[in-house]
Figure 1 (cartoon, rainbow, N blue to C red):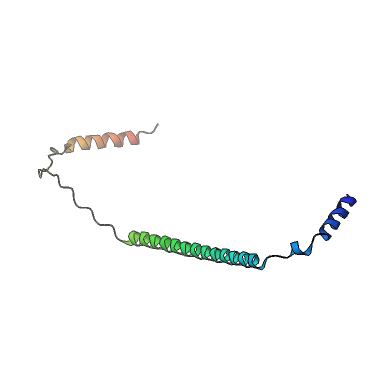
Figure 2 (figure 1 turned 120 degrees about the horizontal axis):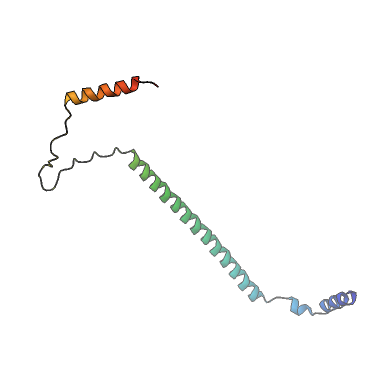
Length: 116
């Protein structure tokens, strides 16, 4: 392992200083590209923040509208009127004679008093 590290160290030291120097025009282009990327990232973050703010505002408006709708008194429904205009005939109401009701009441009282 040591011989490998020594060989690498010697190889790096023997490289010419010309290769280590960068072209100033290329460095300037890379800096411009980096600045443009940073600007695009900032714009993307700003747009995302605007979208989130608009989404939050829309959600708040929807919830406020729902609350206003709930606060309104419900309208009374209109009475049902048949389309034909004729009143429904349900026939006579059933009636039970008073004597039959009295007899039924008497039987119920007798059954409730008869405790076993």
